Length: 96
Image (cartoon, rainbow, N blue to C red):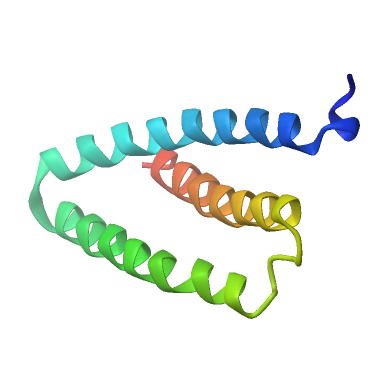
C-alpha cells in the first residue's frame, strides 16, 4: 500500500520525524537553559510564549475551519503547522 492510498500512514511517518526533531530541540533548549544567564532567561520566555500561543492558535484554526473539514485534513494540517514551529526552533538553536 502506498502512502497516497493511506494518508494516515504518511502522517504517522511525519509525526515520528517531528518527534525526532522535537527531541533535539528539547536537548538544545535544556543545555541552553542549564548554562544560565540572560540567554537562558530569554529562551525560557520564548518557550513559554510559544506554548501559550500554540494552546490558543491551533484550536482557533480548527474551530474556524482553517485546518480542513474532515479528520484527515485537520490532522495533516495540524501536524504541518506544529512541525514548522519545531523545525524553526531546531534551526535557530542549532546556530548557537
